[in-house]
Image (tube, rainbow, N blue to C red; front, side, top):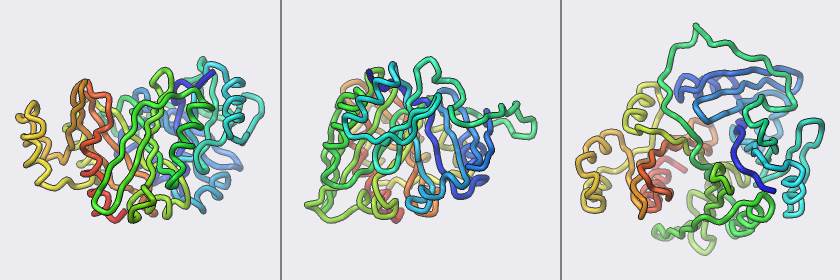
Length: 337
């Protein structure tokens, strides 16, 4: 009994139209279905293997008042919904909803998990009346760069990360994949990666070392008013082309200092011929024993400056750019986080 994959991610929006426009016009998602009722308005967006639901309306207000725009639900496909529900409850989850075709349990902070039977993974989310959206001739064609949701980064309160990791291993059948401790001057952060048996769900859990000075993780916790999703990492096949295209669509990325690329040729001689292109696109590079990865992070497009997005291209690497953690951390610090 375990969770296997991410069926969809649900985003609660204060401004529905602007939120949908960011995903559709800027990131290239396509509307697939809409639902409207007294509780709110939702649209299901698709791009390759990623499904996002954007929701606004009365049902979102409590979450939005506390946290601002953000991820309220990460729906998980399960080999046994009832069994996964029971193990999650035994591990400390609470039952948020249980009705015909809909089982929801609590996760981290106020982000919950709708449990979806594996055969129903591609069906429209339960609990709403959906109308399919026909292909829109009025919507300009956009190149689809994103092909999967590589991982979800989660900020938790200092001192609670190990407990959160245990919650997912005991309650959802995940395993601990890796861990990393990073010191950054007078600040430090710790991380644990937990992953489902299928590798279809990967959560990178992040906490501030409370023995050090407060930093960006605590800044997120403060602005978000508790634990939550810091970023979604979208897998792409050609990150440099994707970044240039997304720049043209108005997406803002974090800036990487020139000194980073001056050192990159020495640190990673295998990609020396690409460094000029990486510098132009501000893309970060890293390697592990399995291969290389390239990655870049957007600025948060939301008022509270919390949730942002990552593009990641894997060339065999299985890690998460540990050598780039400091570069990302410092970039986020400069960006006001």
